[in-house]
Amino acid sequence: MKLRRSERIVAITKVLTDKPYRLFSLNHFTAKFDAAKSTISEDLSIIKRVFAAEDMGRIETISGAAGGVRFIPKKAADDIENVVTDLCQELSDANRILPGGFLYITDLIFSPEKIMEIGKIFATQFAKLDVDYIITIETKGIPIALATARAMNLPVVSIRKDNRVTEGSAVSINYITGSSKKIETMSLSRRALPEKSKVVIIDDFMKAGGTAKGMLDLLEEFKSEVLDIGVLMETAQPESKLVSDYTSLIVVDKVDEKNQEVVVRPSNCILTEVD
Image (tube, rainbow, N blue to C red; front, top):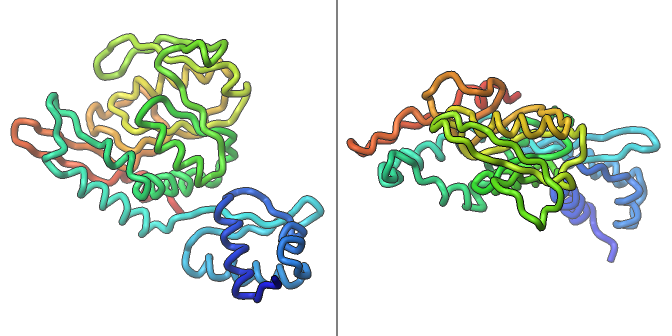
């Protein structure tokens, strides 16, 4: 069935947004919709104009024989602020305080709607980086990493806290946690990550940065280039972390178990660095 322009635009938009960063040739759409290149180009111009006007992302056209069109996700700064502010409000509930002064965040991390929004924020933050893989460590970092990877159309590699025979040959290191000063182990299968890959690390929480530092050390064994680190939440104290270059969305100022008080706020870096 021959589609009308309005129908074709809907279909093209779905194809592009389902596979962000993937380059589609014009021939792909001309064959799929039985339309001339000039017609498809006009369709793409309309989509590009609407996306730009609504700040919904970028439709990028690349000329030349190897060129085509692709969708680059982007969340507007005010959308990011709204998402992070809403998360802070939910996290400020004293009912989230667990024994020992911990904060319950599992429901947020495993909420598909919320986690996809968080992934889009990180994808916006890292859009200009030439990333090959998203790296995380089990277990709570995995949903955030998957959402980020989905928005950037990248594979995820998960570092394990122990070595398993099903992973094959692996590289393992010992590291010292930044807060409790305990010695822990993390490992990564040699098959999981090619050497000299360009990666972004994603995790759910950072206190002193010991786990992030451990991941950096492990990735050095793979000769990987770590382009950035993204964490959902960090604690205000200690102010000096074991890693210096990272992006956080939320800062936890206080979790007072005795007085049942939680104080969290949006991180300055995510709200000031996004174009």
